[in-house]
Amino acid sequence: MLRTSSNARTTPRRPVPTTRTWPVVLAACAGQFLVVLDVSVVNVALPSMRTSLGLSAPGLQWVVNAYAIAFAGFMLLGGRAGDLFGRKRMFLVGLGLFTLASLAGGLAQQEWQLLLARAVQGLGAAVLAPSTLTILTSAVPEGAARARAIATWTAVGAGGGAAGGLVGG
Image (cartoon, rainbow, N blue to C red; front, side):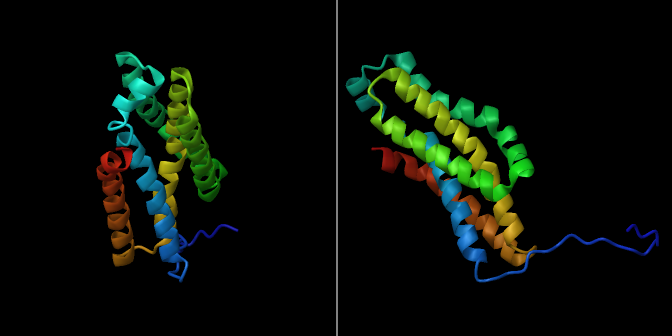
């Protein structure tokens, strides 16, 4: 029923902090860490990929770019999918796709297999990344707790980029 009174207000439902809040933040941070880590993790491994898979110079560039292009190209659709089908569901779909593509990339025996796996990783990351922040902001109430959660999410993401070189080599 609609209220027509001028002083009627609708307030959005605010999340109530619970003991589940920080595990949700941890899961969102872990997802963001993986997404950012994977941008730089292969850079150190490129010389060994060249040797073991016989990749050409353009092939090496595509190993890096296949992920980045798919990630950037599908991120808006990944965010919209979260709106349509649910943040948690898209988080899990993105994480599953990302994980399976990571496994496929590790098992790749030919250049095309690795490039396809990297592109699918980027697609998984494009579904996963928008869900991490929306899950975090819906789980943590506005104010200082949310500011801390977003700061933690940002720092963990930056740590993923820095850790890429260490983990990849």
